[in-house]
Length: 417
Image (cartoon, rainbow, N blue to C red; front, side, top):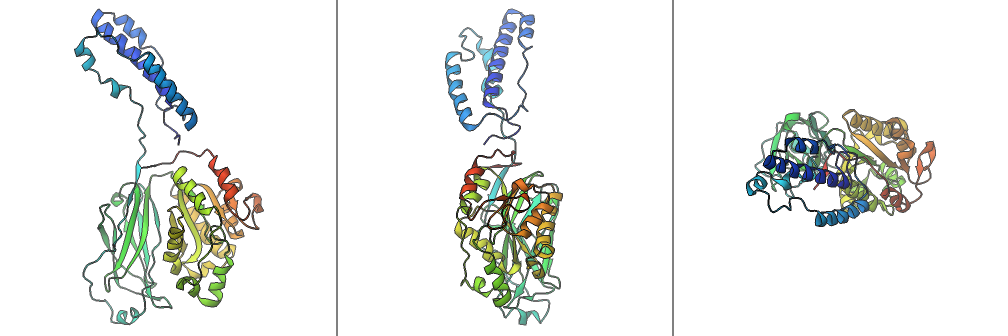
């Protein structure tokens, strides 16, 4: 991938040749006293380190072949009479090396095992009754920007009716990048069973993706999320899930109205993926370096199931964001549409740049347009494709994926190792 701000291979070859000639003349001047000649040699215009991005990868490969021919034909410093001490005084390879990519690398820090340790007593006797039901905790993935603090949220509830765990302590950890956990602090659940542990800008780890774990200290139950830490100006692509990456979103709302999500919670209903969707996310994330956000109208009780579905089918890793307020799952502009719009504008306010958005519903079109995503960069699957000037992609992502592969995109703010 060619990145903005990097010197092209051809420009670097030119600068190498100029620098070699200049250095050779300067060494000769030191021996012969020809200071004026050396000064004339250094009048050549230098190649700027902020030159425009280089050629395409194919063209760059051709340049590398040309470079080999030039190096063989005219290698620098072939004068055997040059004094050894003068040659040793200059690190030619270091002086003429191509510029490094100075963008921070995105590290990946994962910890497979949940944090353990001793449990503590409950603050309230009633909590002993609440926790008789199965834990149904969840935690949103978080996108953090260097230089700005962020909250790490969690929701804690038990039983089939999602009874909230109130006024109880939770310990928060992140992966230490060595298979263990680094403690970040404690928080106490509110009347809705939620916590939001503040993480100051100075406490953010390096640019990367980190596993996060939130552990209820009363019984040791754990929920997990992921934290992305990236520079300002990071480029995103946004994907809806139901009806966009899956073939149908009506099944989800039938679940809401009739079965309280039990078929999808129990695994009786597993959504089918639209053809080409998995490959499209890998193109965007891996080949083109975009950070992905899976923005879904699913409620928080489906957080882990949604992540699991994406992981099991092999979609590229991205931040999953679900609805916190169950009322917002209703398929109207005023509910799920507004929830998506608010989330996207919040990302933009923190310096993220949305390069493209993918959806299938009129509420997606409403949210993406409200967030300022151009219609030409809004790709809609299914019957609503083309509405509002959006791009219709049909019933799968195969043809679009071929077109997307040819796109020239801005440089990302980080690099992948």
